[in-house]
Image 1 (cartoon, helix red, strand yellow):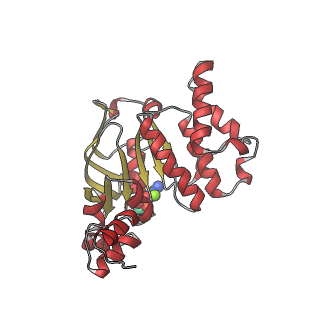
Image 2: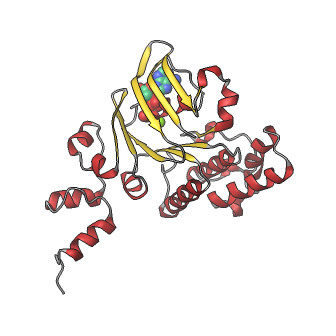
Image 3: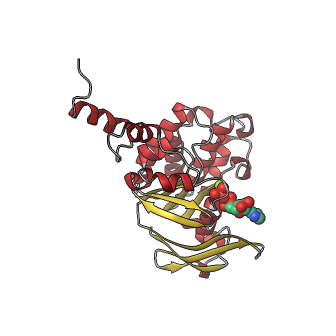
Length: 271
Ligand SMILES: Nc1ncnc2c1ncn2[C@@H]1O[C@H](COP(=O)(O)OP(=O)(O)O)[C@@H](O)[C@H]1O
Ligand SMILES: [Mg+2]
């Protein structure tokens, strides 16, 4: 599913302007990351895309339909949003109940219900906590419960608002694998994150937001090689990019693998 934002502006209560002149195109089955300091407007922008907020000005076109003409419930059938704070999204007293809710509301038939629930559980790797009360689980795990509850809606677009927050190494691995699986399933996925290593390792299409605007959209070399832009946006380079930069060896090394390749190719390391 493709998404186009045309000259979008948004002001809370019609007074507090937090987005200005946002233009963006996300293609079908794309995997895109949004970065930017706190308060940059990332959450507001994705809440506009999923229909929870209505733009003050501008248009949002999803697969050729201006979502102005649709109810929030209609938009939600196509765009699933995983809230930044899982507690805004959990209503049931078992993990399974949480995941099984959407297929019931959406009146999926038995076969489809089983398929989407099994898939959501598998992708988020939560099969061993299905009987637990979500509120008794740590925040990082509650996040996976809410991701599963959105996956079971089987939307074509999935928005993940800060899924990396508070995740340990294992949580990050599950998220990385999840992005691969969702891509295979043909989903369009938008991920907001503060984890620059996660972005460097998993995305080749990145949007950087600050001061109510999109400052730049580009691949990881163009985003993480632009130190002036990162400084202006109060973001740091991934560690490897920073190391390569400080050693003055090459500006477009972002990931560990590329760094190792460079060292080996140039025989920087001698036995
Ligand atoms: N309900 C609200 N009412 C008024 N201002 C808000 C509300 N929610 C967010 N804001 C403000 O909008 C700006 C953008 O917030 P947000 O979209 O949450 O940014 P981000 O997700 O990038 O941290 C911030 O200045 C924030 O304080
Ligand atoms: Mg936010």
